[in-house]
Length: 432
Image (cartoon, rainbow, N blue to C red; front, side):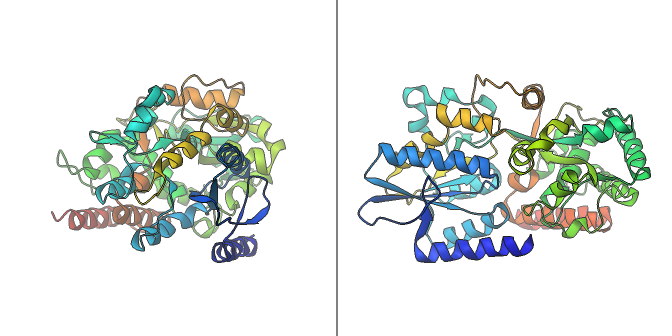
């Protein structure tokens, strides 16, 4: 699998150098110098969603015959570095995905993105979108992105067949979850599939522990340097200890800290019945639909359990109400057409196709028939707080520090030491 992944990267580089790209019908074509061009970056690892994007691009080009879209698909875990290079060399793509949060704020501060407010307000277009989703890219000065790809929250997905065979019930508390882990281990199952090489996957456990122990204000205060908030707060330390409690119980596969999520290492453990559960974003459903369609009916889902004595509301979730937002670079020569291209990505046709692909588009008045997707949507609608992923919320330097230290905690580093180190880096960053 790793060899295949490397080959794909090499192929992408060759395509970039040669100026060759795939069109809406997945046919390799040369760019047409006689047409005006828009460059589009996307990072969706789900092929069914990539087909939706390709269809949107095809329809845009069909309706705008003097334009050609140069569409480049980049693996998720390579994207941040790639975009940093684009910023440094002043070669930004015209339309590109962001997660809002610290990275987008940085681009706004340097004038790197177009204020889309006039486009979003025209014909009341902004009313199309989920209010909470749009709020994540809106500030006092404008609207900086369009919610497109997905409303995604982290939930625990599990194999119903294994639960039923072992007479297990969905846990409400962390103690009940630990009992399930013990029983799964006794029957030779890996309790949680986890591939943590890039750390954001394991970080979800850490974030949930922080939320369930202390509520949203603990991270908010530490990240925004208010109310004497600090990353060496006891809640962060205890969250790290609870992560290590799971590690010491054998809740994860051997070598999990070196396994690759993009290569499907965690999902393959579920597909072959080696593992029973996965804490994953709700994009998990669309991944399964494409990779292993017959596994979809086996999937059950429940929220991360409460912690006895914790201050966090057990209905709180971790995630984003716009899995990817799309922004227009200020260097774009045709911003009007760039915004029109984005509209094709989330028009009524694309919304219907995204739902079929197992996604929850960040728009109002969704018509979803699938009961599992509706269950996830219900968790979203009833969540008092959706905590944005730490690694996307924080500025890039602090995001990198968080992920590095989170992975080290999974590897056995003292949680108190890790928390103190993150606080030290944060103070240095803000010159405190």
